[in-house]
Length: 111
Image (tube, rainbow, N blue to C red; front, side, top):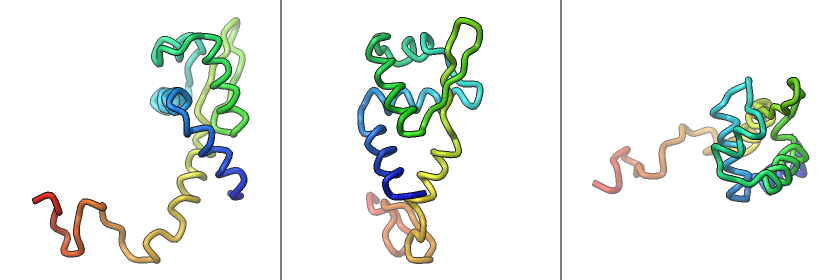
């Protein structure tokens, strides 16, 4: 994945409404959701929702298809997985990763 593509995707997700829309679509799975249902789940007004869906589509994170009189939006899981792969490429210099709440000995720091 190219850096410019990653920056565009991260910029699209760096907004509370768009992040909520994307998460709703990820939870819906490949079947996706109609725009009206996305609005119901997220509480975003139709005019704003249209703008946010356009931004997510421009970033390559969602796709749409016509289903009768409805437009169904779906998360592009290939793009999501590519973004995650880019962000974690060469993670931890080849060493096993551990959660940040664990110290080097593997014990929870909060304990």
